[in-house]
Length: 328
Image (cartoon, rainbow, N blue to C red):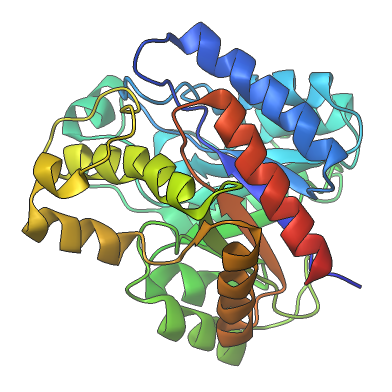
C-alpha cells in the first residue's frame, strides 16, 4: 500500500491575474487532484495578502467540495485565534452536513495576518486561549449534547476530524496531549521539525479522536519534465517568500532566470533554508528527494504544496508528484 498523499493550496494569485482567476485555478486543480489520487485538498487562511485568494477559507472549501465528489476537502488551516470556536463549529458542521465524511479541519495558532488584521478581525492581540478554544470546538463537533446551553447546530455529532497544525513545539505538545493528528508546517518553517515530531510521538495520549499518533509532513514540490525548468518554476515561490520577509507581499511573481540578481545571496540563503523541505526536478529527481524525506521523518502521510506562476505548469507539477507518490 502506498503512502497517502494530499495537496495544500493557497489559491495563489499570479502577477497579471486576479483573485477570480486564482479561484478558478483552485477549482481546476482540485478536480484534477481527485483524479490523480490525492487523499485531501486543503486550503489555508491568510488575510490582507494580494497574492492569496483563500481568506474566506470555509467558503472556498465549500466551492471545492461542490466541484469534486470523493476527495476530502479541508482547512490547512483555520487560524483559531481569529474566530469564536462556535462560529468555526457551525461553519464546518454545515460543510460536513452538506458533504458527509469529506471535510477536515486543521487548526493553527498563528493570526494569519499582522497587527492591523488582528484589530480588523476584532480580536484581542494579547489573548492566547488556543488550547481551551480547541477543546471547546471539539465539544461542539463531538457527540450530541441535548442539555447544553450552547450547541453547534449544524455541527454537533458530525465529528469533523480536527488536526493541529504547527511550526513549533507548542502544537506538537498540544496535539499529543489531546490525542489529535498533527501536521507540521515544514514547507516554510522546518527549524523544529525533528524535535516536534519526536515530542508528539513520545507524548501522544490515545483518546476518542485517535488511538495512535498520526503525523503529516508538508513538502514543497516543483516538478517538470525538464529538471532545469522545475528549478526555474521554483523561483516564483522563492521570490514571493523573500518579498514577504522584507514586508513587501504581493501577487505571486513570475519566475526569473537569475534569482540572486533579484534578492541577493544573503536573502537567498535565508529563503533556501526556510524552504529546504522541498523536492525539485524531473520525476526521477523528485522521486529520490521524496523518498529521502519520507525515510528520514517517517510520516504517516505527506501533504504537497508549491506555488507556481503558470497554471498549466502547476497542474503538471502536481501530476508528476502524484505519479511519483503512487510508486513510493
